[in-house]
Length: 127
Length: 110
Image (cartoon, rainbow over all chains, first blue to last red; front, side):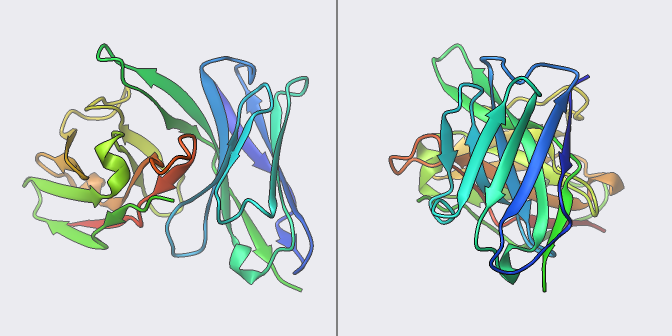
């Protein structure tokens, strides 16, 4: 069964770069049916999509974070990574990695949805 | 980019039916997917597409859509359904591979 696991520092200083890695186990990250994404959740608040990546390296970012976000993929390690630069206390959150699965129906409608999630990792921005 | 709006909190009596709604312009173009999140846990997909449930999700969960509003209905709510629920869809304002979440609805089962 495919699993996702986030890893990285739990504490980052203000103005520095937050770096996280998501390791995919039990399946290949190089499948054409999936995108891979990062979502975050500040304490006590809702979910915010950060960005997504295809195994080929194509990326899509939340416009509100685009200037600070870089998502990359390493197919040889079955991992994808998140870098968020110039962090502030507002970036303190639980960061989740997730799989976006391709879906289509008989009417020709197609879409993607987040079908599998990692457990999440808390990143605190503090000096 | 698009926004999705949810009521912050909804309550339902045990065994009764509850509808959680999500409004946004993107829902005129895309179906919403719905996620259940219990305290301290990662979100879990409960509805996707027109009205599809992943394996293991009880059939008391169903989804529907009309105009700019998507709904998640729980028919015969159980105590274990108490959780936060989030809707999600793609952005329809030109960034077709950008996703947005609603602010979430806290469901209380009385």
